[in-house]
Amino acid sequence: MANTDVPDDLKYADTHEWVRVQGDEATIGISEYAQDELGDVVYLDLPWDDAGQRELRIGDHFGDIESVKATSELFIPISGTLLRVNDALKAAPEQVNSDPYGAGWMLVVKLSDPAELAKLMDAAAYAKFLESEGH
Image (tube, rainbow, N blue to C red; front, side, top):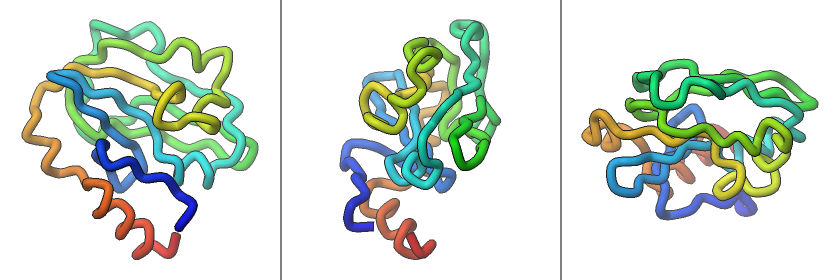
């Protein structure tokens, strides 16, 4: 656990997605812990063509991530309108491993209910969550 990066400026879901809020937009990705558990990411199935036309509700399945170990579902940690998908991940899904909080971001949504942020964990709570889960 000591080696897992948990940036203070993010919010976290118990499904290991993170949220970075800037104004009324939220960037979403998966945590360093999650990408480490998955191993080398080889493919992402994201809503590539749905930007600007798809409403996502907290808890909705928004994609799948495939690694050398497993395929896992991705869940949206905050409700909003899909604005952008990180198209660079089509050709280079390994960016999720090398830079999960930077170049490995997945989606940007326009927040529809900022009050939902209170349901997410801050960095300290997420670190404790990982410890309590035995990670």
